[in-house]
Image (cartoon, rainbow, N blue to C red):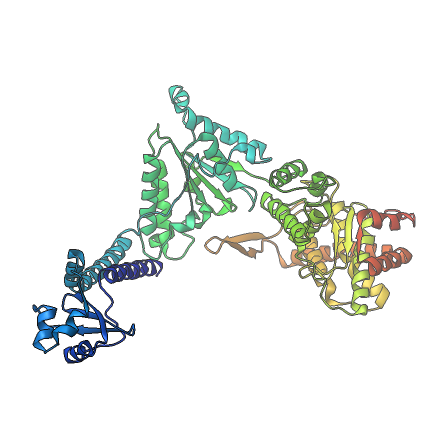
Amino acid sequence: MKRFGKNFFGVLVFLVLLALVFSLFLTPSIQENNLTINQLVQKIDAGQVKSIVVHGDTLQVTLTDGAKAVSQKEAETGVVETLKNYGVEQNALQKVELRVENQSGAQYWAGLLLPVVLPTLAMILLFWWLFRQAKGGANQAFNFGKVNIKLFSANRDKVTFKDVAGLKEPKEELEEVVDFLRNPKKFLDIGARIPRGVLLMGPPGTGKTLLARATAGESNVPFFHLSASEFVEMFVGVGASRVRDLFQTAKRAAPSIIFIDEIDAVGRERGAGLGGGHDEREQTLNQILVEMDGFERDSNVIVMAATNRPDVLDAALLRPGRFDRRVVLDLPDIKDREEILKIHGRGKPLGKEVNLKVIAVRTPGFAGADLANLMNEAAILAARNDKKEVSQLDLLSSIEKVMLGPARKSRAISEHEKKITAYHEAGHALVAAAVKGADPVHKVSIVSRGMAGGYTLKLPLEERHLKTKTEFLADLAVSFGGFISESVVFKDVSTGSSNDLRQATELAHRLVTQYGMSEKLGPRTFGKTQDLIFLGRELSSERDYSEATSGVIDNEVDSFIKRAFDAARKIITTHRNVLDKIAEALMERETLEQDEFYAIVKSFNLKQVGIKA
């Protein structure tokens, strides 16, 4: 449709230009008055004609009163002879100024040819356009097998390893790829073979695509980028044809890098989908396997791919000789997060009080994409408030916006609901401050964000990759803090605890069935998860235990929940005065920062208690 509009506009412009040219060569024929020869003779005899200008057979008449008129003489007859034939008086004719203006050759031929040529050209142009459209449709039909790749050259959109913060080990792995592309002879002379395929694995947003582009930038080679879903079409065989076209293009541009994003879209385990061996996705995967095996030993083409589901990939894709090098990208730690924030802070005027280390401490579990979004949201917030710099408060507010959603300060709630929310969040915060093993409280707020009526922000003091049973029990107790607080203060409970109860139940079940933390059941797991690969999600769990064991599991889950619930209830009932103080402060200020919260808690000399593991 876009192409049709463009061509139609071009035809229209061409016709308008021809009309303008035509108008330049033709004399306007619209006059104020038309006279017959008899009328003209009468006016000449009456002395009312001042001048006559002859243009071919056309007579342009100017009357003595200044009026204009036009008349027509006989063809191939002079104007004087025509007037005499009609009996004009000689004396009267001598008083009229006669002037003959000969038509130029260009005007003559334009007037003769343009009325014929212009329609002919318009018809030729119309037929040419119709044939071109038909040809374009035919070419499109034959171009289904061509792949729509995006080329990032070394001189445009260049990214290097300096633009990628953290990921030290993955960058070291890829430096060998860079060295091979720069100097392949060094490896080939000693008999070494560089991995033909490099698979980047990691959670979404950790920088897989960015790292691939940095590899191309460091190597200074063409970088062909496309998504695996672009191979698959509704026509069988199109995906395989596009794979062949992709590899042929990359070989012609060698040394080069092919990067296939989200390769699990076509690289999933074969035989687990619908359609059997004739499935278009499986045909595409087979062609990828053949192309990667068909590389010559000295080929300077390296295939890189990214996925966050390496568990569903076909075994043939991961065997040595194809994707035989796997690079794992983890979520950034606190040091890496600070470096990533610095990179995304380039070009943004940060205030002098901004401390990116504090922001890094408050963002555990954030991927690089999340941190980039955080910095962008902070800049938007500063611009919305007509600031010239991004402040620390803007960054802190953006953390909560990225995690929970925008603040809904305009949400109308009653005073009673506000009080319930204040005591609910005060219960979470109090239990977190009083139980051993819980993460420190960084912020408590009753300002609604996203789907949450309020929130208690707890963050660990340092990066953690392992978690103990004591810490899990502390998390369980904190989850029940809001529910117990409502029950103790209002003698009733609300729906605000539904999410807390669901998370607590799931956590207690994992402690028993996955982490082996039940003393009665011992160090073993229960249940085999089945992954239906063609749907891509874990859908069911196969029971590998008896009905009697199922009852024991339920009892152990209840035991974990009861221990955490009793500990949280004891803290809240024992320190009711602290709970009231925190809730009052939240009702008054709506938000308590870490220093403000612990100032209240320390004034009561609150001592931490443990939960029996």
